[in-house]
Length: 349
Image (cartoon, rainbow, N blue to C red; front, side, top):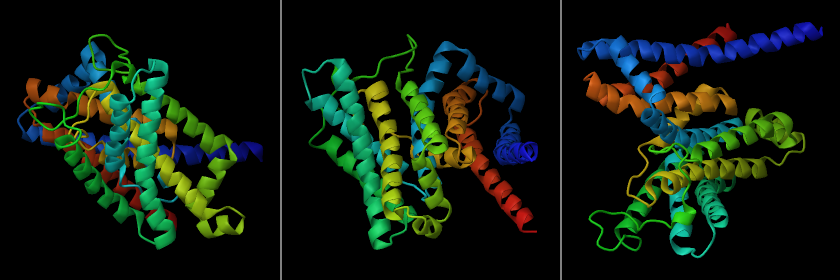
């Protein structure tokens, strides 16, 4: 009996990873067709993309830099999904997290780095968590769908940051909207010399490990999954559904906020208008591809980070438009949705 149960678990795990693998495969296949239409050898283009992004020092550093916000925001979306919520507000939470960290980095002074940096990161987490709490409150106490509220909060956050860096936070004599540089004591250290790779990647890996422990080894993880799978049964079993939903959303937004913190504390050292190139939306695809596993988010974020890092390379070396890379990312999500729909239909039959 024990061996049969173990075999069932292995079989179930195997079928869980098949759809994401197929989605990536077919997306790359269609991407190859698009590259061929553009007049370039797909093999040459893909070789240039992955070689530059993963085997050169500067390229790998750039890949890690792109992977960090994708990893943190992807984990945030994953937390929400496991709790039965769909957080489309990662982009806005990134902006608010960046704002919180910049405020600490600019205006809290005369602190040693081992205090100043953690304080700036905590502020980023709290600001991102607060932005997600607004959607959680509207969901729990007003019945507003979180997809709508988080999506609209993105635009509010972007316009808020645009106003701040154009007016009260604008650096003196700045030629374009951006804040002054944060203090050095609040900056994430560089981990690869002569590259932009910073210690934010370790923060992302740490968060993935903590979430894996939370979901698989603690009662909190069980409660989140129970609420996500069947809120009525969870409430009948004595779980506070409303509190769990609010907790999940705050944690989700806080992780996305840390992504914003990593951008301003480790890469830009100041707050810019539109400093996120859509990481919050890529994170939705990453979380869906992970099929509920925080550890899978690491690998998928690395894949997306590699694509983003190598986008300019294949444009320069192979003459492939950068939009092809973004099309591949969209195709991954499209094929995943198709594979999941087919799988669901098959189970019903």
